[in-house]
Length: 395
Ligand code: MTE
Image (tube, rainbow, N blue to C red):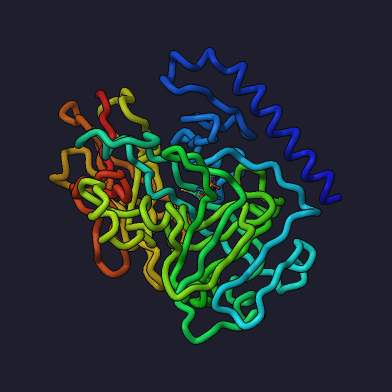
């Protein structure tokens, strides 16, 4: 049964690729390379095919609180590996008493847990960030975010099983993909502090080793057959095609921890070496409808979007406000999905637009009273952009 499901997923991927090849007609209309059509006529807009990087259209993103897999953004630094469930193994080594290598069947013998958590790319909204000063990298709009139900085993249960040495402080993850960069080939890796790995709470594990997404085996692009999911952290710490875990006394030396996902002004080697890896996503919000450059009638207009809490245990969204007059007055939006510390919330508002309205703006405030900043400091790699989201409109 499981094999049939995997085959069906693989066929679906081929079908999607064929659809993409046939969707070139939308090219000139969107300025995007390709459009993949998923269930419910939702679309993924493709930034690059190999490796695969794609994000949904914003009106599709707010159609549901749980994002269907077909319309979930894909962010890959290397090509998607073709892995077989039968031969797949996960190893765990380093500062542990008893290193282990486990098959998927053996992982299935641990107690299974589920969590609904939002995954966000640290580069989400880079295209807006780039308007301050151009930044290299995938020019994500506001769609490099999605919310899914993930199931698998708690990382802490595996760590208990292998036994931690006293000097253990960090947990490294390594994937089976090959990334080509600067003439070198290496695997994608991530790293989280041990405290995060052990921070299980009733509503959420500190980190999950997930085999399913929305109750189906992970698709190839989302990490089949195993990935880490680290609620509240940048997507880069949720490592796909996970095959190796190393417990260490320091963060991983992998390129994507040591060099890439850092906040830097220039990106020169000394600055990169001196800065710590990014872990958490900050408070954020975006307007998803109406979309940029929409023509609206003066009067009351419905505005919808998402808001993301700052990934801190116990902190959720307190309020979301929308402005149609450049921030002089604000209308409080209705939060239409439940509050949660590691999931986005959907919101909707009715706001009066006038002939003077040039843009719609949103800002969120969390339960600690912290609000999204009006502007943010530019950084050379274009991460964590969370300034007020502004959508130009015509009346
Ligand atoms: N894991 C591996 N092995 N390779 C990758 O390129 N990309 C990371 C993370 N895990 C990546 C990875 C980044 S930057 C993000 S934002 C998330 O995966 C995206 O997960 P998704 O493609 O399932 O949405």
